[in-house]
Amino acid sequence: MRVYKIAAMGGDGIGPEVVEAGVQVLKVCAERDGGFTLDFQDFDWGSDYYRKNRVMMPADGTNQLRKFDAILFGAVGAPDIPDHITLWGLRLSICQSLDQYANVRPTRILPGITSPLRHVSGPELDWVIVRENSEGEYSGVGGRVHRGLPIEVAQDVSVMSRPGVQRIIRYAFKLAQSRPRKLLTVVTKSNAQRHAMVMWDEIAAEVAAEFPEVTWDKMLVDAMTMRMVMKPQTLDTIVATNLHADILSDLAAALAGSLGIAPTANINPERDAPSMFEPIHGSAFDITGKGIANPVATFWTTSMMLEHLATSAGYPRRRVCLTPVPHRATADQWEANIEKYGAPTWCEWSPRDAGRCRLCSGRDQSSRRYLLRYEPVPRSVGVGSIDRPTLSA
Ligand code: IPM
Ligand code: MG
Image (tube, rainbow, N blue to C red; front, side, top):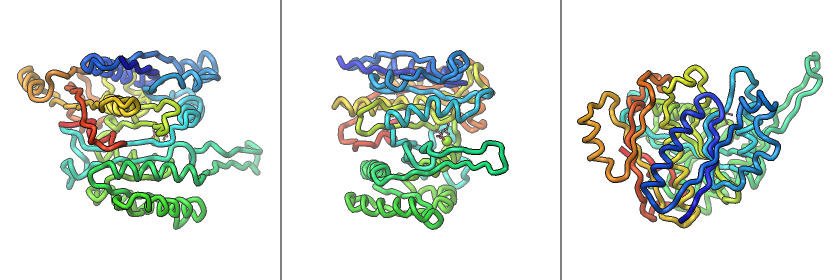
């Protein structure tokens, strides 16, 4: 039987709580499937580790991770340690060292969740944002000299390489091609950034020629924010630089009703190192330890993980279907839902406490009890369509 080795790294804040929930779900999925097993190893790297060791992870940390098939990551960040230390000490260095250059962020409005957009009921918003995850504005190149002096200088240099841009644009075209609408929007800012972003546009046009079935257009990032709000139905797959997609994906999560449900996958498409799966929401110190963190983003990312693992082994694809049950569901309604959606492959997960989830701004009616189904997905589902089949009503 195929054994997948999974590194489970809760990290900081609510990270360990949601990762624990995700691990439970993954265990049930493996049990129900019967065709593979998951071998978990916990990692205690993060801010507590830093307080003891003055580093976020051991010096050979990323090498230790190489032997795993995937990483499930919670969150990083603590109020008493500067963010650039915690982030570059752990998450960003893992992404860079393991060359997880494609950051994939699906956004959909799940059943039970209301979008703040009054003209959107649900199906109009179904996007996947592909974020360049290895260079660009977050390359880490730069420096600071003459600290504190009147002549101080600081630079963060945005680095874009032809192979770096080619590979992310190609990944996005492939993903767009695998989705029913075959529609890609390339986000740019070449009107103001006249070097790298002009190259970005040129490379997009070159790569587009390899994908004649994909309809694509180009959008300046500022105008893109307006289009996401005013005409969400005109978008499907979106590719953008590290910084642009970072910002646009927070907007996407808010428009879909909650940051608490937004997942991401840091993918190494060549599979020469493990990919890393995580919720986008971060460590949320204010609700840490209260048992009210919304695990939906983590559930969603675990389903992305299963799809990724399954495609790597030539193994039949699998998906996790998540069915949010109304949070005041009676026992009868709950049973009815199990009957309708569940059997035989379902598991139940509910937070320890019925408190209100802060991450959802009160919009997420689904943050109480979840019904999860695990089922095979036909092979006809296109490569890279990891977002579409993963959640269903
Ligand atoms: C995200 C997060 C991270 C990012 C932070 C924590 C560095 O906000 O996943 O979008 O922006 O890269
Ligand atoms: Mg961000």
